[in-house]
Length: 377
Image (tube, rainbow, N blue to C red; front, top):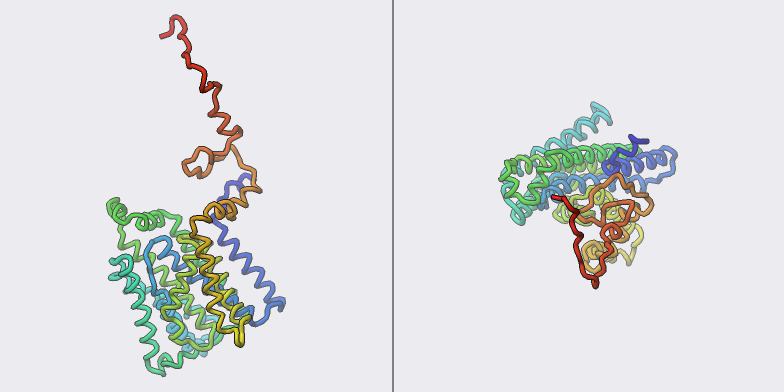
């Protein structure tokens, strides 16, 4: 029991959430309880989670605004899909999938290095413009490529992987993405990355290689975006460049922002909720009501943003957030003091601090100091 209490469970929350979801849905799939639309939804959710977590490394932890995440996904989708088309007839489905994932992720990472070397010397809006331009250039190149190579405007025809297994593979890759991301952030390199986010000038002054760390984060993020693109190609029979426009990059950024900057758990939840809401709106609002899909989605997004950022709701958020609700069911241990946020009233003690600080002196009574004992120095 002592070993279980010493474990920092908050470091494993993401693994537990994703692992439980993977086990539950896998069991339901093998039992034949999941229909085709639910399997497709799981594929979309896992791809979105991987994109949100990988972009959170750049936007949330590094503090740089990137609007070209869909461009790296596009590279992975086209090149990984092309590798699948060429390799699957001779190697089979599973070996072709593994090689395609490696090809799509590696090429996207190479593009991340090529774009990152000059672009990461920029900051703020300038970096956002460069990454946005990269995404549009990549999309346009694939759209205007030779039809025999990448399908042209009609898109690249790719093999569809079995729905009963693809979402399981996607869950495993999400766990891999989380493992890499969390191990980077919780290491000394992660502290250097967050130092760059907080104050780049101070980070340079302490000897941190700012360019190196920016490039590493950008490359890792691009790698997993490329893998997400390969999964997208396997979940569709056709890869079209129109899907990877700047609106897609904005949609991924919205997931990161709504989940909380630098909050991987929030990114996972936000990506799941947003994709599920989009699918439910598309299936629920049909016919004449189809024109309201984007309106309802926009209203939901506005309400969530206002709730997360409105100063007047800060007290309500602090009182009813998940962390405080969990603490109500836990008995505080006076022997262990965690993050007290430099406030004495946050330190758990057996005696109320108000009682410790109270005195018997009345404001109206005069204060007379005690006389020293005779012979005292």
